Image (tube, rainbow, N blue to C red; front, side, top):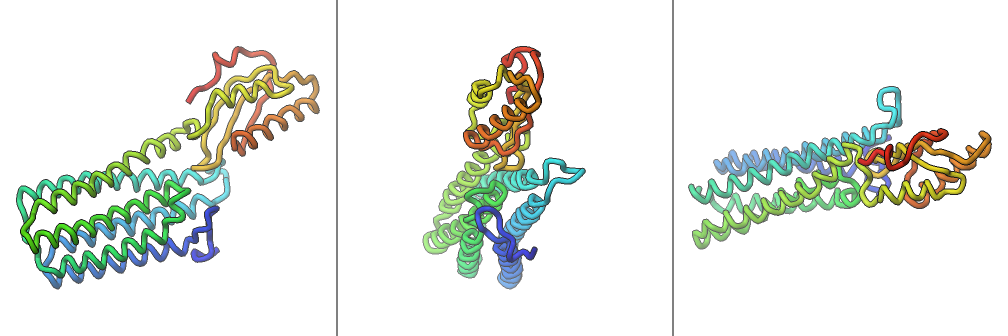
Length: 300
């Protein structure tokens, strides 16, 4: 399946990610050329920042395609967690970028550097346009995927940085208002850090097999126990397979006396779990007796 024709559940093609990577690489090359011509180290530094954006988008693309692979003998649950791992990497680097911006803002305020002409502001304007265009390419996927959202936030942070260069650079060139660089950069850093720290906990919970967000563990246990034909339930575990698919395993004590009756009960539980809680994959083991649910249920 070609990159341009492969879509996820939200309909965003891989081709958009490929195009976004290509655009960021081209912008990196243009900024390096501009930095060499103007003698601006800041432009070259910004080029490396854009290269980081291209890398984050490329990582998101690789993880996205890897996540579609079916289960095999190595990854019996499939490769859906690849996108969560990519999200963790990109969010971690996003936080590092935010902390670096704070450091740079304070360092530049204490030791102001001369702005090397309007060429930097102009190039920053071009970078802003390209960063916004790249962000728009992947925005649809960012709504439903932590992996894509993390890469999307990298582009947003870069767009804000370019906007900051334009605003602060103009104010410094026209009014020698060097404090503008500090204020604008700190505002951008605050936004980047807020987004990074907001998404990191959820990403870590996904990797650790926590109960899925929006799912009440006690309600799930109570619903299974209340199902017709179930005497009790224990050893209940609920987690995510990837970002969106939910899985459950549990030991049930059925009232059924035959294999056929047991099959009816387990089918009833699975249908209820899928309809009420969106749990697509449920593994149920029947047992007789064996302890109280509150003693054996595994709380995540």
